[in-house]
Length: 255
Ligand SMILES: [Zn+2]
Ligand SMILES: [Zn+2]
Image 1 (cartoon, helix red, strand yellow):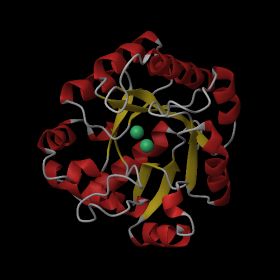
Image 2 (image 1 turned 135 degrees about the vertical axis):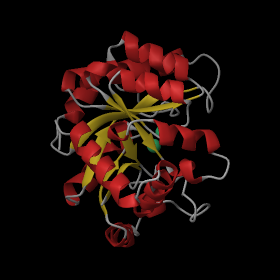
Image 3 (image 1 turned 120 degrees about the vertical axis):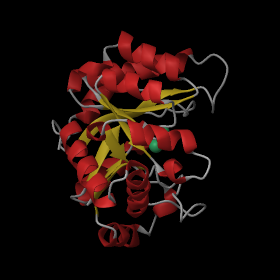
């Protein structure tokens, strides 16, 4: 059994295709999916999915790459998170790769999410790209560890993973771990404690080998578990069981 801890199945890529998506999840023993918010304008779609499908959970938040959308306040996030299927705050974080210039607004938005997570006691889903030092610094300054959460689609070094784990966070691996050139990332996946690991697709992006280049979907998270099992000398079933247990432990307050 596997759980996709991060997907975007409300995106237009999947419109009219949800029956097939759920069929493939079932065929590949993927029991649950957490659908991640990137803009408040689209949050009602995600909440609707979570209300419709028992095995879909939702998060609420505004992605750090979205620079032309409504800026969330702490109060808004807290209010929207007050729903039994909303299990996380995010995705939030810092991205100095996609956007450049004065990104103080991005750091402020990140702080807003951390404050909402601490108030709601719901864990954070953190996106970090080319910004690991600032991400960890703000996590410490805002006491993100009080809410906990996950570093999603992890692509940083082992040192960054260990610092996040030290703060009480989980590390989630995506299909990137199956890519040929992801040698260093496979070493991180082999080294961190299994009890702090999650798996995800980040679908529709980043389809794992052997589906690279196709539209990714939650059913493919099995291939992430297979690759992690290979580098850890384990089995996909054991990785699936452990990461599913971790998922329910992390999001326990809400699920
Ligand atoms: Zn992300
Ligand atoms: Zn995402």
